[in-house]
Length: 261
View 1 (cartoon, one colour):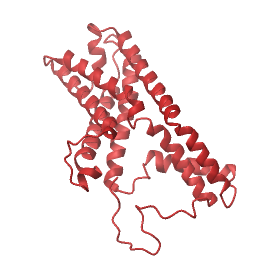
View 2: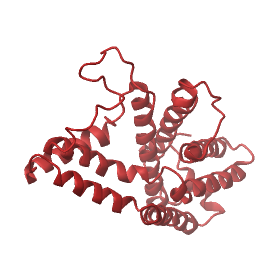
View 3: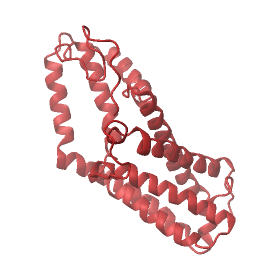
C-alpha cells in the first residue's frame, strides 16, 4: 500500500491529463486567492507602510550584511523551526502539519507529472512520502484541533465548535484524511474507492479555492513579517513597545505560563 502510486492506479479510467490539469488549477487558485487577499485587504500596502514607519523611527541604520544575516536567521528559526510559537506543543503540532503538508504537495506533483501511469512506475520512496506526509498532517492537525486550540484548551469550548477562522485547518484535515482513506481503499480493492476519490478532489478544491477566506495565504506573509520584526528589533524601532504578552515582563513574575495560541 505505502509503496504504490495511488494516482497511477486511477489512470485506467481517468486520463492523466485530467489530474495534471487539476493540479495546475489548484496552483492557479492559490496564486489568485493570495493576490486577491493582498489587494482586497490591502495587506501588502499596510505591511510596507508600517515597515517604512518603523524604519524611519529606528535608532540606527541596519546594514545590508546584517539584513542578510537576519533574513537567514528568520528563515531558519521562524520559518523552518516555527520559533514564533512560545508553546512547545503548539510548535510541534505546527511543524508536523507544515512538513507533512509540504511532503504531500511535493510528492503529489512528482507522482502526477512524472509517473502518471503504471507504465512508468514511480520509485517506492515517493508514494511512501505521500502517505507519511498525510499521516503527519493528521497527527499534527487533529492534535491541534482537539487538544491545543485556545478555545478548547483554555476556554473549555467544545472541539466541534466551528468558526470561520477554522476553514483552513478543517479543509486541510478533511482533504488529507479522505486522500489517505482513498489510497487505502484503492490498494486493498475495497469497493467505493472511486467515490472516495471524488470526495477527495472536492475537499482539495475547497482547501485551495478558499484561500481568500481562510488563513492559507498567511503562510506567505509570515516570513516577511518575521523578518520585519527582527529588523525592527535590530534598529531599535521596537524598543519603545511593551513586552509581548507571551513573555514575562522585565520586572514581572518569571512564573507566568505561556499563552495558548
